[in-house]
Length: 126
Image (cartoon, helix red, strand yellow):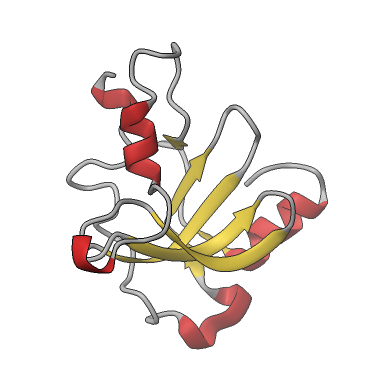
């Protein structure tokens, strides 16, 4: 897989605040990164990220639109998440299909969750 298909690089999550830092903002919290799955249309709008654990928080647009925690990648093997994280699935996909299971939207600009929800309600991804 080429570098274009990586979920992150050295700067992908550089501006994303730490976990709990936007806790009191509700839908005024800002999403800094958008990941998506081309196969099923799911989207993850990341508002907070912990580079030490690979844990993220944000708005997930899947079967439902809801806030939640998820693993971008597993860094801490002692406190491993159940199942695979997004990057390991991305890496395991390598060579099986001509596209990655998850991609980072490089054109996504920081957007409030409120604006993202309104866009989703209109039937458009943010």
